[in-house]
Image (tube, rainbow, N blue to C red):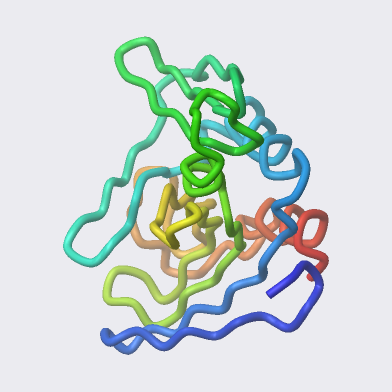
Length: 171
């Protein structure tokens, strides 16, 4: 699926429905988006792979250092760091390996019907093998900053997700 097309819908075995809005991955758009997220909005994000059987829900206590080298974006908190291949990578002899490592799909998503929250808003990246690289969760209107459930949703908390989805995925 390409930028600006109808969203893809997935139905999970757990009864969830996820709507994906793909963004273009060619060029440096993914890199620019992630730099913006990790430099300007780091305090509002929860990050990590979210796969069946494992959920890494990492939040930042301080602004991470964000650098790029040979297509890799490094997010460094000082105590720990991670790398994401978000652009062209030349540090391997194999063009196929470089293709596999680089982001092959990036999509904003909204999942409804989960057991933990009525809905979740995020961004997910996959590599050239279709493996999840990272999920970035945006502020959730159903929870406060301490992840305590709110009596009434604060819909303004979805503004950043909506703005970035519109800018990067055209939807």
